[in-house]
Length: 303
Image (cartoon, rainbow, N blue to C red; front, side, top):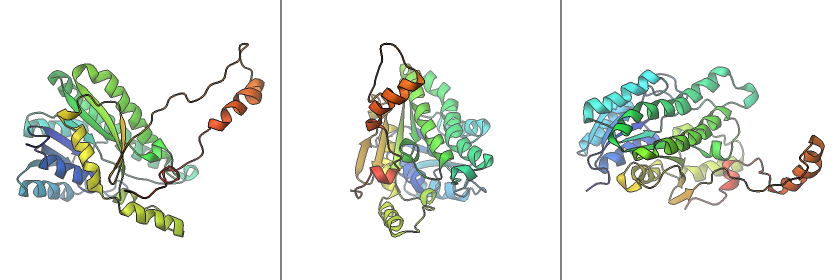
């Protein structure tokens, strides 16, 4: 018995990398899988139905059930067609895995409006469209699983990724809102922050020995090692787990923090701009966050 026997699952961006491994393991655990991928480049350019169909062929060759879909998550109409593909092929949908993504990296002061919009459309708007299109089914059937992909680029920070970081942190807020609004219908919503080498991070610079060493470590983290968490969060076993953010790095699983107050100051007579400068900021400064990036926080080798 597989953990997803009898379930219908949609995995977006499933033609390559992490999404491909999600689709393969979902099918191996008994799910009928909609393998969605537009087949574009890492920057979101072009279309090619081949990657999604190749994954479907792998699943079917192993005895599983799958169908390919090449609609874009970046439009409301495309998202609805993806959901309808699952309904038409498998009768319904039990889990939506929002994995599709692109990169348009650029230092902030040089980032174009088009580069901003393209990334927001696929990651953040795409996650909303997919989740919203599935919501009536989940609500009417009294169950459902959302799994969204976030990133330490948003949770912690990174250079040259204002569009990607904003989208990925926005997905965290989206997931939490879904978890709150749809808990009454037996629906869960969680995020995974993956650490793995894929084509979406293949552009990390290696101009210095330190950067080259960092990339070498990342390359040891295989995409397939993220899949067990996605399968679990798509299953009935995760019914009591919602509104959480999990980091997965090789054999490590992290429960990531969420924003909460960490220190406070007060004045009985209220604040002025001057007393903020003289009292509040000096008192709080010791707890300020540094301008960290992911590598500054995860300083040890993957396990």
